[in-house]
Amino acid sequence: MAAAGRSTRSIAKEVGVQPRIVSLWRHHYADLGLEGLQERPRPGKQPIYTKATDKRILRLLDKQPPEGFARWTGPLLAEALGDVDVQYVWRFLRNHQIDLVARKSWCESNDPNFTAKAADVVGLYVARPRRLSCYAWTKSLQSRLWSERKVI
Image (cartoon, rainbow, N blue to C red; front, side, top):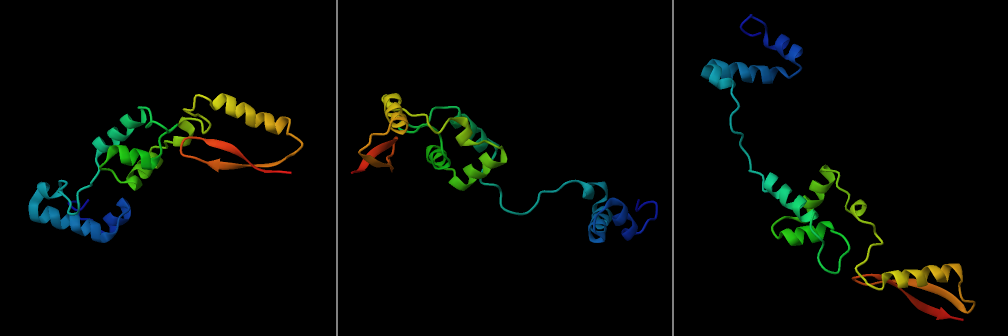
């Protein structure tokens, strides 16, 4: 367009960029010819994490989580990788729409007695003892257990 004698403003308007961008490219061409229009290395910090890091995260997700955990979490992934910040792990998972909760159910457990414990808890809801007034969740590292708090 510039070779056809068009102004910087008219080129910018047609292409949809600011006139300063057109002017910059015109100067590049005037100084270096066609070579001036080639992509050049950009200044700035090189990325810390690469596609290789992304592949490592995906490979880790295909493996079983550490013993005592039913599923992977962002902090567990970062710890297993060793050299990747947990914020990058979360950003990667979010960008690739990987939902760790949806990958495995929240109620999965490595506890061999989980079925019996769950049946006891469900049974308390269905046929609650008369003298039993309340139960409360207590959290442990490997599973959630009901503990009796108060009997009237």
